[in-house]
Image 1 (cartoon, rainbow, N blue to C red):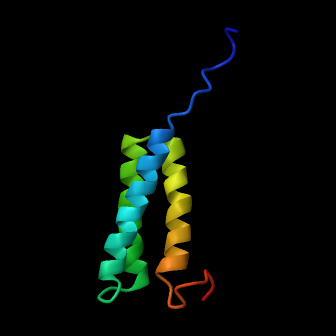
Image 2 (cartoon, rainbow, N blue to C red):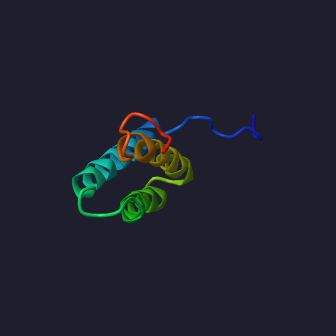
Length: 84
C-alpha cells in the first residue's frame, strides 16, 4: 500500500549502539578511580552523540537507555544496585 512505510528495522545499528555503550562503560570503568562520577558521564555523552550522528535517532535513544542502566549498575559504589 502506498501510505505504509517500510517497516524493516536496521537491527545492526542497535547492535553498534550497544557496542558503543559497552566501550564507553569500559573506558569509564578504567577511569573510575581517578575521576568523579559526574565527569565519567561525559564519556557516555560522547558515545551517545556519536551514535546519534552516525546511527540515527532510534539507536541513539537505545544508547541513552543503555548508558543510564550501565552507569547505574556498574559505576555506582554498590556495584549491584541502581540506588545510592
